[in-house]
Every structure is written in structure tokens, then in C-alpha cells.
Length: 484
Picture 1 (cartoon, rainbow, N blue to C red):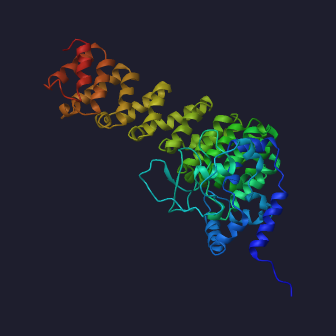
Picture 2 (picture 1 turned 90 degrees about the vertical axis):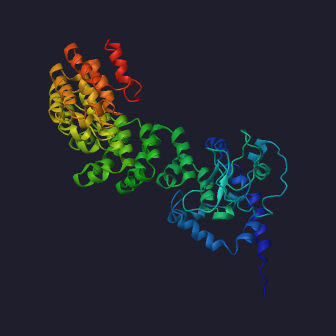
Picture 3 (picture 1 turned 120 degrees about the vertical axis):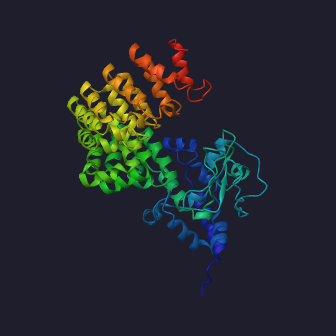
């Protein structure tokens, strides 16, 4: 009977074989990745396979289940299982060229391969202590400089593996034994592929935070033909593209801003066309992330390609005005629509001005209509706001609309506003109101002399102290025109 080799000797032989077969990559893309610490982190946290298997024999099934269950900010389990064959033992071997280029460094007190590094204590008092990504290592805290990658190994241990970092801080990432090493090893294997091969995994790379860094590096240094291929890849499945825009809107916006061909813009427009349907519009209005993607598309694409979005915005302009991102989208569309479409949008907004003026977002679009609209739009707004000026002046948001009404209305309509103010039974409370006092001050500045004198005498007859904190602007205006 042939005796099987002990597990320790078998793994040690595999490690020695993998070291002998190591071939350092010379591709230009890999050199850029070294500067961004994507490749460096594998060398820094690499552990010998013998130590790795000894420490994780009992815990490996449980850790793999936890890793596969963490869908957020990591690769999907199906994507990893299908590509485990491309991961070789070199993923756990420190690449010699990186350490040689970085220069010698002081040896650490304990080699990371001999001692299992414990998790640091959970201390919220430390300003730069931050949790790991969602779903992974929830109870642990990673310390490190702000805006830099963080992890579990000390700078000394990393320096012993890959040398000192140029900025004085070493890139720190969780050791492989904490999460199985599948994601990091797969990223290392992909980093050795050509940019064309990396682009084919665009949708999967965008699901991982570290994969996003690899993908953006390729996107920023590739030709326009390869960027068109990226757009074709992410828009192939319309449903997946919608989910990608919801989960990774910033990355999609970056892709849109980098497109320079009509073909790419047409592919993106075709993928967004289903969002503009009547049934999907109500969901789109409450999805700020997809609205952000639409706004980036309108700003980058020609008007003829984005015409379907402009028509949908014109039909739903009132509902968009109530949303933070919808308001920004509406304002950008107003700069690109035709004269007839702009007139139709302003007319719809003018008829809803009473309700929009009291909204924290809608009041801005009413002010835009007053500044840029035709006299017909101003007349519609005046008829809608009449008999409501006192209520609007006492509101935090609509008081700004009342001030613009006093600036753009003709003298006859201004007199209607002033008479409504003066005939208010509690006029003294209106003068001392924290918001209405600005509308009264603007009225003193914009009205002609006869109407200004009437308003000034009405304010002075209330015998309000000059030191009132809400009347200082009014008294300053009265003194400017010689009433005090």
C-alpha cells in the first residue's frame, strides 16, 4: 500500500512549484495598476499556502458561505464559481519585481505568515475608523488614513512583503484567510489579461468595489473603439442595465461622459427608452439614481438622440419639479428643448404655480418662469397667486416667489399685492414676520413713489421698535428713501 503524503508536505511542494513558475507581468496596464495598489495588495497580504490551509481547515466552509452570501460590493457567487479555474497559486505568492522596485524595507517583528493577525477592537472614537463593506465583517473596524484603502495588516508587515509606499502609507487590505481570497485572486488573474478581455467582464467588475478601480483604469486609458464595446456590453441586457444604473449610478455617469460617438449614445438611448413609458414613469420619478443617469445623458448626447426624453419631461414637468434630481433634470431640458416645447412646459408650470411656490424645490422653477417666461406666463402666475400673497409671504419658500413677483410685475399688479398686505388684519405681525419682512422690504424698493409712500406710512404707523431683529432690513430701506 502506498502511503499518501502528509498535507503539509504536499502543500509545501505546491508552493515551491508555484514560486518556480512565477513569471512577472510586463504589461503597461499592470504597471499602472501597481501605482494604484490594485496589484500590490495581493503581494502585501499573500500567505504561504501551507500556513493558509493549516489555519483555515476548520473555518473554510463557513467563511466561503459568508463570502458567497455577501452580494453587495463583491462578485456574485455564480461569476466566481465559473472562473475559479483561472485562479492559480501565484495569487498567493509575493511577486519579486514589486518588492525590488520598492527597495529594501525594515523587517517586521513577526512575519504575517507565522501568526494569525487578530481583528482590531471596535472603537468608534477613532475619527478614521470605518466599517468594512456591507455584509462583510460587520463587527470589525478597519483603521487607516481617510480616503485610502484600509484593512487588517500593520504597515510594518506590509512593508516586509512589498516595500514601503511612496506616500509613507502602505496599502492595507483584508488577508485572504478572512474571506477565502476568491475575489482578490480573481482580480489579480484578470489584471494579467488584455484590456479586451477585461472589458468582457464589465458588468461583473462594476459590482465589486475593487473591480470598479480595475474597470475605471481600463476605461480611462483605452481607445474609443473599446469604449464603444463597453457601452455595447453593459446595454446588451436592458433589465441588467436598469439595475446597474440603480446600484452604480456614478460609474454609469462616468461611462456616459466618456462616450464620443453617436453609436454609443444611440445604444444608451435605446436602453433608457423603456424608462419613459407611461407605466414606468411613476417609478422613475421616485428613483433619484436613474434620474441622475438621465441628466448626464441629456448633457452629453445630441438633442435628436435625446428627443424621447425631452418629450417625456414635457409631459411630466410638474411632477419632476417636486423632486430634487427631477428639478435639475427639468432645468437642463429647458435649455435644450425647442421654443414650442419650452412654451408648453412654462404654461403647465404657471397654472400650478400656487402649489409649486410653497414647495422647497418647486419654488425655484416658478422663479425661472418669472425671469425667463413670456408676459402670458407672468399673467397666468399673477391670476393664480392673487388673494394668496399674505400666506405666501409668510412661507419660507414662497416668500422668494413673492419677491420676484414684485420685481417683474407691472405697477398695477404690484398695487394689488400692496393692498392685500395693508388690508391684512394683523399687519403688525406681517411686518415682524421672519420671512414676510423681506417681501415688504422688496416692495419698498420696487414700487413707484405714490405706492411706496402708502406702504411706508402703514409700516411706520405700527410703532415697531427699531431694534426688532426681523425689521432691520425694512428700517434700513426706509432710511435709504428718507422716511426715517
